Length: 305
Image (cartoon, rainbow, N blue to C red; front, side, top):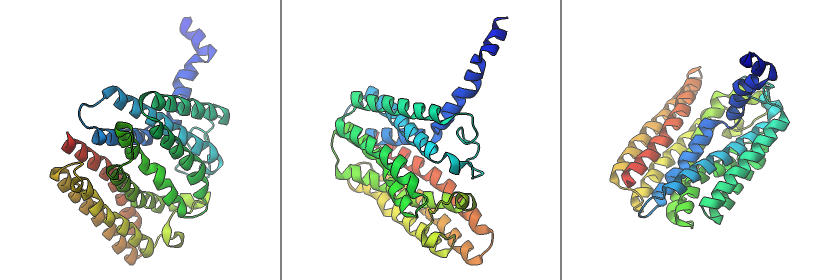
């Protein structure tokens, strides 16, 4: 009788439908990557005993601010998401959550995340976190329909988490922090462009223009993907050069960089062949980028420890 009453009251609908939709709205996998990158920077920036409370709260704060950013992104792109196969089942275009609920989620998560960062980090970390939110949600989002400049702008907030972690540990921006920022910044270009290549037809429906080389899936775009991936090889050695980590991680990062780079040559080859193989090669680069960053960051952490 009690269970029947709960069902009638709509409480079951709330727990089984609304909560998962709210969580999905925060893009937990992406937000977890942001949180991990922040924690990664904090660990590398810490000299002496690690402050576990600050580390945990930095990760949680980063997760919430990232969740707010991607929620705002989905609010602004609700109608565009409805046009694309890969996004039409998201909470907003599918109607599982309405705009007012999404705005509330964005406001609450942004406030909670910011308050945690204020309490457990320092003013510079807080300010740059808010800059990251603004750049991603209100600059990168509309630029996606303008041209590939959006990728450059989006790469800035995408690369800020390790820098923020370092600043949370040290209280200042140093050349070591900029090295960590640079690695993640350069990584975003093959990552973004591989996704844009694979999702080209869907993106075209929404008017997104993210690929370089006049927005085409061609050899010119493949070359640019290769060049940026090539830059990761020397960039990955800089932490060892400046004493942030050691030779063990440098070796792992070099191997990962060479394997990542090899995938781009396959894309160039398949572009010249003008078959369906190019999309499969771009898909491999996309998955390769997903693997590269966490493996490299874990290698740096283990080398530091």
